[in-house]
Amino acid sequence: MSRPRGARSEGYEARRREILKRLTIRLSQQDAMHASYRDLAEAAGVSISTLQHYFGRRADIVTAVLEEARAGAAPHLAHMREPAGEFNASVHEALGFLRVGFERFGLDDLYSLGFAEGLRNREIGPVFVDQVLEPSVSAVAERLAEHQRRGEMRADEDPRMAALLLIAPLILVFLHQKDLGGARILMRCLGCTRSPLCVRTGAPQLRIGRMTSRRMPEWRLQVLQHGCRSLTLTGLTLVSANRAQ
Image (cartoon, rainbow, N blue to C red; front, side, top):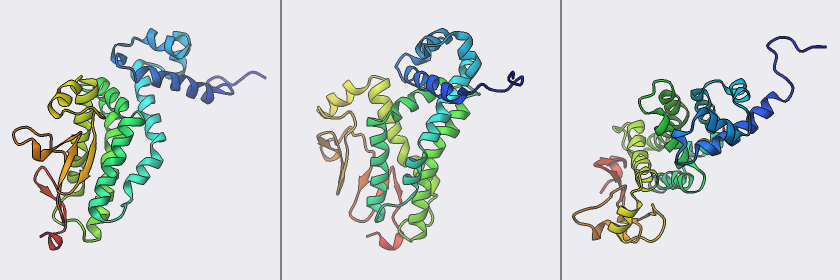
């Protein structure tokens, strides 16, 4: 019996996922934004017509990659939403969790793809925001909101704005260090021979590489400043007022 017109063949979804994995690898490479449709078909090991059959246009391919990344990140986002201990430790744990994602699990490639394909693109840009940026911001905001409900964070600060201010420096530093080729600059300034971004918190200051902010009076990359009872980011004090010194 012939298949009804418009119905998908058996194994369609499995085949599509297999192709999508190969496309994700190709779009994670540094020259991804210059990859033509033919390049993508070759990377996926299929013909152009087959690629069109499964995904449609190039923008549809990028959208599928971002959507798949969102689906795969669900358990990690769930972890980000839940507080981990007291306020200061919980905020640092959340940022450390993001840092590991950037350094070890391809989150940097995902952000690079989203910015490269999405900036000034009215179709892909909103997809990147909805599937990658917003889930991360919302997860951290939910964690902060819970601390706020516990009375550990100031009630007059917006958790969402605080989440944006916490996440933005990490994104900027990773883009600066890797895809924009800035590692040579920061490493020369900091004398760091370790990871491009070694974010280690220890009262009363943040360690970046081997140099602390105390040794950089004129130029410093201040991501976080960790005090005894407060966490301050670019002038935003998040600790509950009745706990501040």
